Length: 505
Image (tube, rainbow, N blue to C red; front, side, top):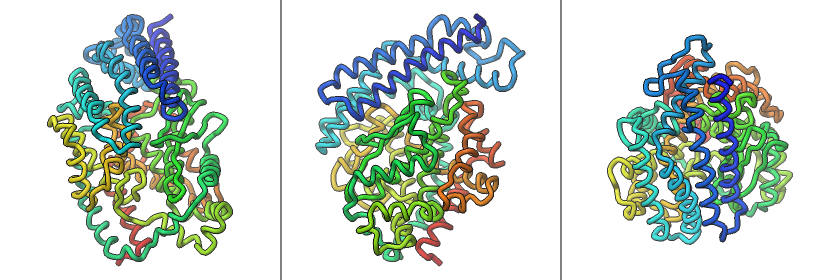
């Protein structure tokens, strides 16, 4: 076998193990009996350790060293085409990061992540931050240790951020967030002055959860999710995972008195799932068969959730179907009334239920707290108080309890520090991509109104999904839109949309 063939075989084996780990983690958050938690943590740690050993083992290392200098990334072979060169560079990047982590640390982190996530579920349910505190304290310490091993950024936090959004820095994130805040805060203030113009009570009537489920699945199928190669289930926190492009799992959560929650989380996770199903099968197991970054991944979920799912054109198609499901609740509500209620701007405690205007303030809050925890050694025990202070600063109120506050998100429980900024980055990417798609696809609104979303999905498949990691995120944005990532298109979109919704001058 050639060096390249050996590398691809080892990566394929590691991907099979990653698929097993993903299935174990999916089951842990959906169907696993509570008493199985300790055993599951051991299983996840074992599989993760095997995967790590594949990714840093002698066969892969020796073969990779034939093709590229492991210290500098300089190619030793000059006969590769552009795509093969990018593939090799991305493999080297992954190897360098994986090899920097001791096997014992990888195993311990995987085990603690599983145990900590289970502790979060219990703490959130019982509104008991004190129970979760020691688990989170240990996780923060392990993430700091991980950052020291990785050492790819100017700060520990940047090293963790790079895991989710390669080449992005907290300085650049801060600049983008500053651009958003400069225009977003005045917009929200204007809306709050006329908030009486939109009534959201329509969405808080009693809506049977089984009917909500059926409607959500119908919408998933409508936008292109292939249920023959995927499924939806329920979990405490909506998420999407994949063992392979032919096996993609999404979850949602349902509340009888909150129609918007399940609907938008279903579309959001559906966007992630479409990306996973659209990755090239022939490249499975190597970087060309993987998503570019979490920010690009979030651009897909936020696009289907907001730019499609909160658009007037979407509801020209979907609203008659929703009325048929809930004739009593929606009998006296026309489509315009429903659309306005769905797009109401109101600061809320829960990030995943926030409107698309105030949503980004939730992300800014978490970004600031994450940097304090990782870079400044802020004590975890004082986190609830800090959280509430930041909520008052950013959104103007204090959560009623820790379940609605510091315990609401699952991410920190399993060590995803550096993940949160990708949600807002995803918002920015999504608008730039969608603006270009509307230029390239004629009559996109009319297609949506007919329930035909294939034009957009085909465009995303051609320009994003099938590219794998053949482009850097920043390269992809410039290639598709002609401009680097900016907050301006996103804020232009928000101001134009909500000026109409609220009839702002």
